[in-house]
Length: 71
Image 1 (cartoon, one colour):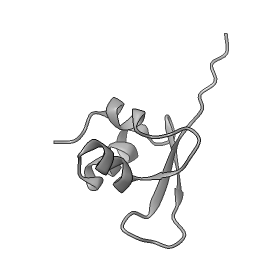
Image 2 (tube, rainbow, N blue to C red; image 1 turned 90 degrees about the horizontal axis):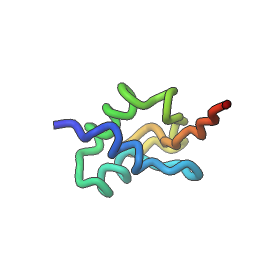
Image 3 (cartoon, rainbow, N blue to C red; image 1 turned 90 degrees about the vertical axis):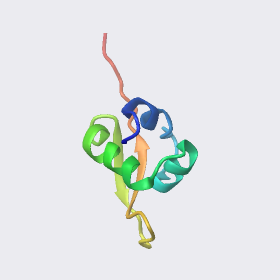
């Protein structure tokens, strides 16, 4: 079963880049499931990604977007 979108989002920092495998180990989930949730439910709306230079197990790093709301 895939982890909840909100739980994954809370595990992604605003000020640093993180691997899906690091998020998964913090949540006790599989990294492929965490990456699926990010790429299908969070990317470009709440999370940005960049390619990892030296490709290891996960090819992307993730960081939360700072969302500014106007009044």
